[in-house]
Image (tube, rainbow, N blue to C red; front, side, top):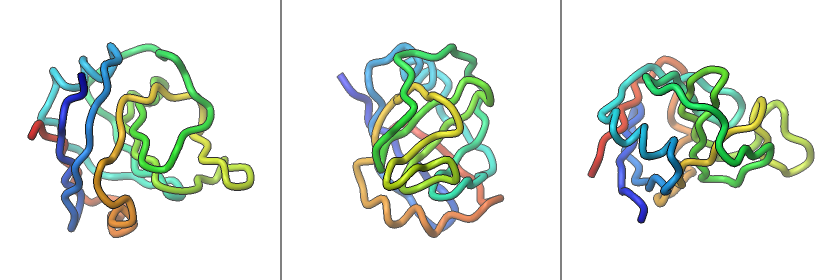
Length: 123
């Protein structure tokens, strides 16, 4: 069963859902979480107070996927190509645990700038 969340970042608020992975459940328990956005191509990421190992790691993700990146204890939102992408593949810096998906319009994520506050909340 998935859990609905809202991600507020800079000028936007976008709905998403977390999946049933152990990592997503740990993040859900830590909500609300806030930090400053960082960007890497069309990826928004920021560290969160959850420490987890890689769970079903993926080297390639889809637009709208939300991932957890263990080396940086980071919550990652993928909405387009990153500097590591090859062709049209969306490639994280290294493997991530996919923990959910944006359910709203990912185009709005382009409005988020580095340093904007990001807040993740349960709906």
